[in-house]
Length: 448
Image (cartoon, rainbow, N blue to C red):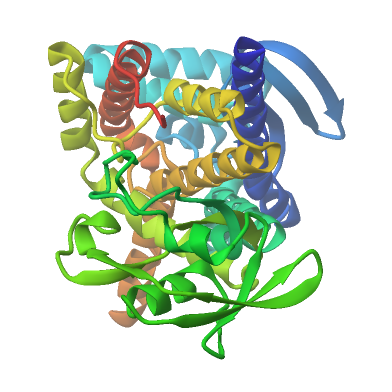
């Protein structure tokens, strides 16, 4: 059963990742179509296509490897110089002639080296999505703010999904909190926090007072207590003093008198040597729903934490590689691959805990994954969404500069020139992803 639960947890994480990717790409698709851009494909995953269906001008599909997704928008970049020259004023390059022109341009640039060929290939692929100079349904012709909205839509969908998941977690299910209900009693007053009860140890004050598991403490010496922390504070502050506890047992209120034993602070708190009161009760835990704003607040806090990890990603991955080679314990707050996230989800599903605890653990993992997708995609490097946003902002700055100094409007920024840098970024991401996957297989982070 444990192995089956583990597999179910992994499958749930794969499904959750697929949903997160689908929402991310929907965040791009909806504003792109809203602004009139032709979208040829909306795909979840990479590799062989498992299912696809064309609706209107867009082909929707699911691919075999759920590690990403994409939409194919017409005219992500301006036409290549070769295409503009071939079209001429008011002309349109189509059909076999356009394909021959593309091959000629590619062959003409191959002598420039590997990166020059990559640039030309990117331009040729982009040119295939254009329908001529009169085509207005292309991405690069959108106003700057609309381009930013389209590219920002994907990461924002992940952030909104994370906020919804955290809201369900904090306000729908609640935070596990020590309640004022007694779960169990200590049998004695131990000599230290790690000592077992000996025959000579005195009974715990709670046992002598007649407190029973299931009792709910309502007040102590007339002071109402809302949670176990408040009750503990009052008890620890009263060593050797008689306390009156108002409790609820089987639906009826009763009054019990208890005298907390005076013990060294280390018995209840290893960091303290002060004498404190001890009665020997352990709390029952329950999920306490939080205010609705706690979910968004937790999401924003997670954004800051993940941003700190992403900012130091190369260093963190290097440390992970070192721990993989040396066998040292990994930083539990370090980066994970999808393999690591799947393993953690499996551990949560297979844990010996109530089902609600396991559901909470899974929702927390999936919400954190979406925060990571949001932050990572906002990095201002191509091919990430943040890179396309940076290109749009740069073009906006150039236009403002030209307007202020009464210069002719600049041409659209040709981001295909950044293909060599994009290639380096992709190789770096693949390398770092490979290291994390190997580490998550052979030296994984474990919750338990």
